[in-house]
Amino acid sequence: MIRRAQSAVNSRTKSARAWFRRGAGRIYGWACERLYRELAWSYEGVAAAVSLGRWGAWRRMALAEAVGPRVLELGFGTGALLVEGSRRFQMVGLDPSPEMQRVAGRRLAAHGLQGLRVAGCAQALPFADGCMDTVLATFPAEYILERATLAECARVLVLGGRLVIGGLWVSAELGGWERWIPVFFGAPPEAGRAAWPARLGEAGFAARIVEPCDGRFRVGMIIGERMRTSPCVEGDTHA
Image 1 (tube, rainbow, N blue to C red):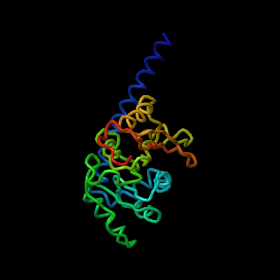
Image 2: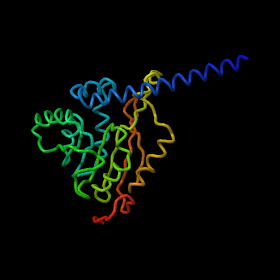
Image 3: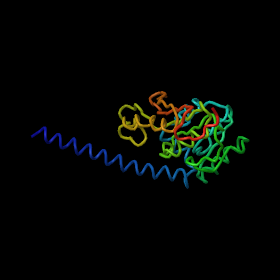
Image 4: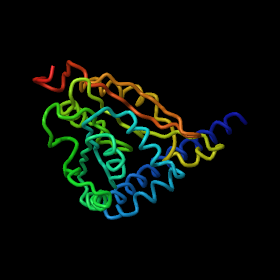
């Protein structure tokens, strides 16, 4: 009897946690959409708060994996990484949000940088075949793993070019507190983790997962190398 009662309690607890995570996930998605639209001006402050001040460091981890000289950043947001990357690379950024375009434009102008921004979507990149050495995205939404996005990334990259997707997840060891904020911190399901490199492989990438450590945090990244043979990209002319 006691075991059955305990099992029922555990089942209800798991169901409650699953319900909470689903609800929190929906709220989180809605909030992220607002931050990328009408609340774009507050994006950096909110990102710094939820990351305990480590947001910039986590973005730079992804930038450190880029190869040049030509680097395309998808979803450049406030333009912070465009500014940093321009010290090492020929940077260009793409973002569909008019609000983020304005925020980034002010930041770039303050640093004397012009002509680094393009409006558009990742599923139809307005760039020529083989014109980039790296395509970079940090903390992207679900669009980044869509087949259309990956095919476009493969198309614009040179053979041997690199796709760097940083911040797909962040796991943390915060003395147990990370269990209460699963929306922000947590490792991905094993099924998803195993499927992502295969998804990139379909688009013509040899992919690997890395998790660089930043103190108590581990930042999940996928790095894909553009292979010679790509089933999703017809007519390779850069062999």
